[in-house]
Each structure stands twice: as structure tokens, then as C-alpha cells.
Image (cartoon, rainbow, N blue to C red):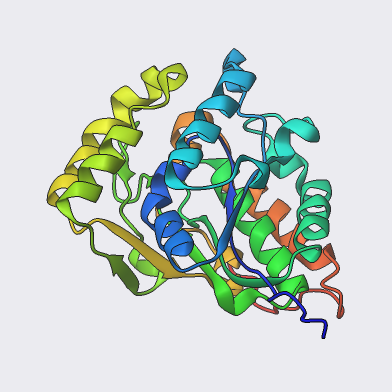
Length: 273
């Protein structure tokens, strides 16, 4: 008698850049411990300002491997498609098509995790929009969670919050951490030597959040949220990169309006910004 093998369940993670995984270490662990096959996608090459693309790739593969992710399940779409770090918003259609094509070849998708809609980096917000559009096409919208990386809500100049979910994104699900896991994740955050300048700014906040805070938090996503500014006031990428949300928000809305969901266009009549 022929017995069909069980259909494998997956937990997917969509990132903009190598090292973005620091914002969801615990979610990755929980997915693996739950018996799901974790698959990760990076949507840009991570090479902003001459950063070493190959080295950044190797660093993330090493960290994910330590968490239990198989290297064959780590996909660098941004490198393959030559999507420059900082310019994901200019490549949304072809990245979404490639991501959708890859996901379609999988079995059951139980959960998908994306960078939060928070106005911290234009690529993070672009990755959020792309992932939600693809999930809308594939009828996976109810299974998408977001994790905070950094943003500048309520602050001025170059100041920013790290791993602090925006209240506008809804209720948080707190992932409690043992002391051992807190220290393990802090150690993993030291595994990106090519990004030492960036981590000089990030690490003190991550240290405080993981050691003295509640740990990691995730929030549900809502396709309607991406029709609105992530928060009131100037966004961090507006202050630091002169990237105007008026332009970027319109780019996001045009992408969503034109992206074929497989059952017609994504429809949402709310046009407020």
C-alpha cells in the first residue's frame, strides 16, 4: 500500500537586508520548535554604500544556521535580481513576482513574518508592502505577522527607537524569553562584524530591550494600514535619507492598485495618507 508523505508546513520570513533577522530570532525558534520548515527571503542585496554583499550574506547564513535554519532554505532574491539596498521601492513588481512564484511552489504556509510598517527604513516598509500584496494574492493575509526593527516616532533628528512596536499597528503578542535565550540572542547580534558601525548604534537598545524588557513582540498585519503614514510626524527615513513619504506612499498605493491578486486587483477604497 502506498502511503503519501505528510504535507510539510512552512514558516516564512521576509527581510529587506541581511541582519534584519535580529528582530525576530524568537519567532524563528518558535517556528522550528513547532515543527515547521523555516524559509527566509532577503529582498535587496544589502550593499548600500559599498557594503560587502557576499560577507553580509555569509553572516546571515551563519546566524540562521545557528538557529536551525537549513542553508538551502535561505534565499537572497535581492542579490539574484540585483536589487540595490535602499531602492527596493523601485523594484517592487519584479521582486513580488519572484517571491510569489517561490511561495507557490511550497506546501502549507502556516505563518509569514515581515518587517513592521513603521517608517524606519524605506526598504523595510517596501518589504512589508510587497509581502502583504503577495499574501493577498495567495490568500494568506490572515497568517502574516510583523516585527519591529527601528523607527523614529515621537523623536527628532537622527534619534530612533529599536524593537518598539507602534501602537498604531495593533495589539502585541509578547514572546517571553528565558534568561538563557536573552543572552543567546544578544550574542547572535554580535555576529555581524561587517556592520559594526550600524551595530554601535543598535546594540545598546537591543541589549536593554532583550535583557531588561519583555523580550520580543509581534503584531498582526493589516493591508489597510499601508494606505496611511506609519505614524504622525516625520518618518525616520524622511529625516535621515531625505526620502519623502508623499512620493513613497503614492508608489506603494500604485503598486497595490496594479498588482494582480489572482482574483482581481487588490481593492481598498481608503485613500487617506
